[in-house]
Length: 596
Image (cartoon, rainbow, N blue to C red; front, side, top):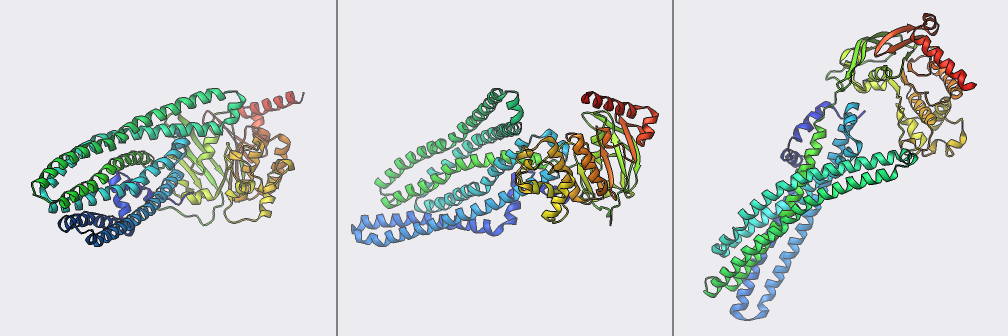
């Protein structure tokens, strides 16, 4: 389980309410980076805005004296100012790149930790491909707010402010004309920026759909090829890809309209200043050097503002991505540790189910009034027809789903009051559907280990699970790479890896949910014989559709339509001639027919 706790999730949800809070949070977290970064922007801007003053004085000196030699000092000062400005620009980019990557690192860790804390129902409603898109593309878009976004805003703000101040000192009238830029640009950026944000949200959603489809297609490639449905999937991918490209192009058209609009407005203002400035030079109101300085300052104002169009587009895209991220972070897990969790010094494995009901909102009640006890160190079985609720019942023991109606006790303590990590550490759970990671056989088995284990111990466990009955299946032994989701293994081999994984955990409670369904009866018999000594002191709850697997259990609980209809030993249930007996006789008959 992730160490991400409830209090962290609440505080993170609070700071993700809007992008402003998120920015302020990281300003407080990385004050040195942001402080030095903005200082570098200011320093770079100061050195840049002094250059036009030097240029003005140089032109005036040249105009008055006509001696080019006097320009050397001004030339050296201009070069020095340009170098100093360049150095601080480099420092600005370096600082903001580093801090933005740190923020990206934090956001990805936070997002992944939050995903790890969410329950199964969340994943039933949210495709994995879309979540991957949010964890990569959306977080990258948020990072750009803290990198190029803040740099662009800072440069536009400080460069424009300093330039306007010095422009006013050179000539207030021409400065007034240049102020026409700001209301026109503000209106343009506001109107187009809103459209960029709206369309960016659509783009990111389309990208998530595309990612989900690709991931699903690659995972199910064997089924697709087996049914010769490659062309169908390609055509559907083409449609999704076209939808993504079309939505991206609609956003790009708006985004790309920003910069030309900024240049158009700037060009109009520049023409006005050229006409009015030229007239003022001819009339002798200002010098030629002052006029050149004004044009230079206008250039210093225009370029950051032109870049601001792109920056606003980047920020709007980041805001849209932040909304998508916030959608996931706003989900709170329904299964969490209590605020003040009870502690058990050593779990023995005594279990009790008391008046337990359970169901999903969309399906109604799956389990109804389940009550029974399990003594520590005993083996009981849960059986019943397909869909009777066996897997759901077993999944409630480690609280995979929330236990809301009724109680489950372990060693006389309500599992809802136990620390979730301690509860799950005390239970080795083999689910019905085995999931294997695209790593080595060894890494997949030791996933369940509570502490470091040796290769020898893993080999012993693998032998108990009869993993090496066919040596050719694992040419490199425990170091064999088994592919994504164990694609190179058969269904039976996957289940045996899952059994080995659970056994290595060595927990006091072992829950087995139909983990022998894909294993042949001969191998199953060997595994059960190996396990008989292994689980002597453990509480074992096993579910199986193959009744021969569980007939030696001390107690067999028969479910039908979510309720308990029979309990007893194998012999006692056979003598009752009820549902269990009918199921057992039917399986015996099917086995005889297979032999014949």
